[in-house]
Image (cartoon, rainbow, N blue to C red; front, top):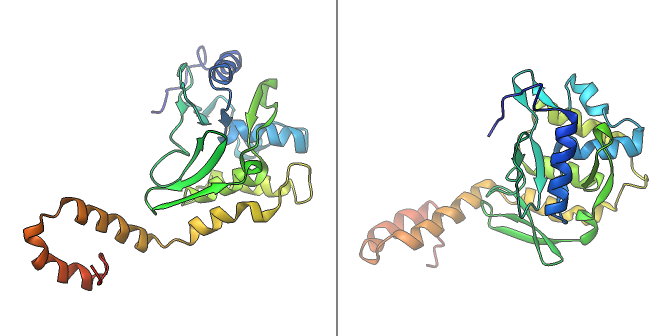
Length: 230
């Protein structure tokens, strides 16, 4: 839900207070999006505002009428949700989500019928000061890159974010071995057509009455929505 920007409500102090409350209520939280990336840009460039300057935006709003969301991962208790909207679904939806089970992290796509455990370093907390000197916990550089690509179509602002993240450069202290991100490559390699067939096949098996299957099966087998061996 987008929040209309209010200069009296959406202030740097209220952002600091709300992020502090989120971290206190959710010890394993990871702040993603531009706010989380501001921690990395301060550590790498000495400028937490690098992305906002490149996009000609404020950390407090996307445009004069829309307040910025707080993109958060692993929010067990999303309150407080005001004045800034806490978006806990940006990286936790049927298309792609990163979920924690105990001490393990998983890359999951219900849409593609995919689930694979991630190396713990991929989701290790990177803590530091972001915009306005606010203490936050985010994730490593390549994790930001990987989850941005995993969401699908890139917007112009995503291209800007990725360009800056790549400028941090390999070999830096914030960089991890590429092989740790192979689950994201395997997820990307799953064809959408296959995923749709899988989903449709699941619906077919769950909802089609047995008496109708002798007439429907041949059609769906030709369309390869169900296995011809069924």
